[in-house]
Image 1 (cartoon, one colour):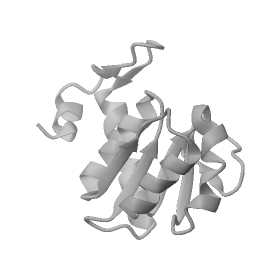
Image 2 (tube, helix red, strand yellow):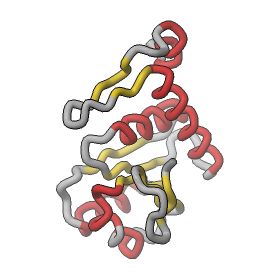
Image 3 (cartoon, one colour):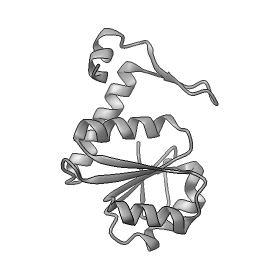
Image 4 (spheres, one colour):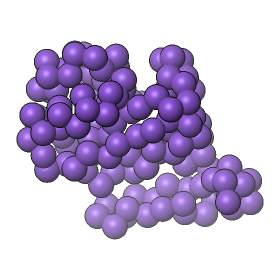
Length: 139
């Protein structure tokens, strides 16, 4: 069933609960956040079959970013959060990702990526209000 249908029928029920933190994201929150990200991808000029990459630890923002990509018809690659910068860069470049979304927890590796991935158009980071350039806050 399409997540939007769950949001209509079960808006305040948990869509998922993060085991490590206990954070609960309801179907309504998931629907709203993934919809916002779908709009962000479209505003960036991404179209069906374009590619985005996600470099996260287990994080609810990753699931929301995936939901936004799915509803936009985008391909996405989830990158193992334990890889070294050159390994992450290889995957980003090979997938021809135009947008990369990461998290504050992956900051140390992520900061090295823009120099290694010149074709990425936009760098977004979750869980931080004032990220280092060229990263923008996902929120």
